[in-house]
Length: 368
Image (cartoon, rainbow, N blue to C red; front, side, top):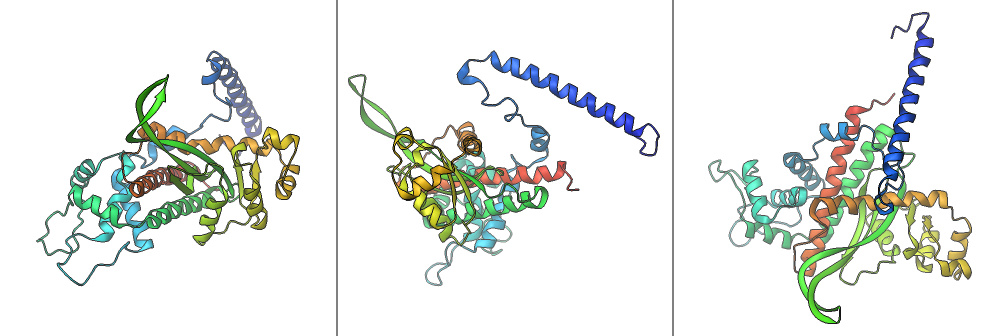
């Protein structure tokens, strides 16, 4: 529209009114259609589950580009440094520790095995040789070499790579949208299916069933990224204190964090650690605690509990839902240490995809 036109304001108001009318009619139709679903399949909020511009951003993102994931992994490895030092004794190594680590960080980007990952690296001509002594040949490690490298990389390295990509994603968000929501987090847990079988009494008969491991994680709500996690067969699904303690030990600030959790985390030790470290815990009180609230710190926190603030906790389930859609929430490793590393690689992949989506939002929106 011509800004200098005498009828500019009239035309602008008319266009805004038309857009609002169209949006209201569309919302009514969406609500009616949603009510036709069974109660379990209905959207928890027809308006809040809308994703305007989502597919436009997804189409511009690198969310399915393994080459871009390898570039991001190399950037993270360059920042963190090599996970192990090359020994000066014995036979000189053939492959670069940095290149092997970069390939492993992107392993679950397309939910691949070591054999399939090797083929993808060959298609992308991702040279993993330590030097050019092989006459410019293409250095693609074998699946046993990749498995050996994953076994050699310490667990804390994968943890720090996950946190680092979360930090980068948060920085992209702050640069474009500001820091208003950046300190809002959520804590949640789930179970992952493993490949081993165990005997169990099912329907009064002994049968074999898949074993499961438990996962506990803190996610940043506005960027949909995981910033801290722990997993094991006997994981305490009521413990947010350990997650916060590990996040603080990594050198990151936990003061002024706002962490939402369901009633499973309604424990005195969680409230005590949160109050002593300036963490605002928004945890739904259990029925027992509503009748007779025990614990000094629990009483202090539950006095100011707000259901309006607690409603944001629902978005904490997005990372687990995203990964379930990608790989069925299954882990294909057998050793306990490799299971934990494999779970971290799944979360690293999730953070990579969130990073690429955050980049894509910058291509759609312009900061005024």
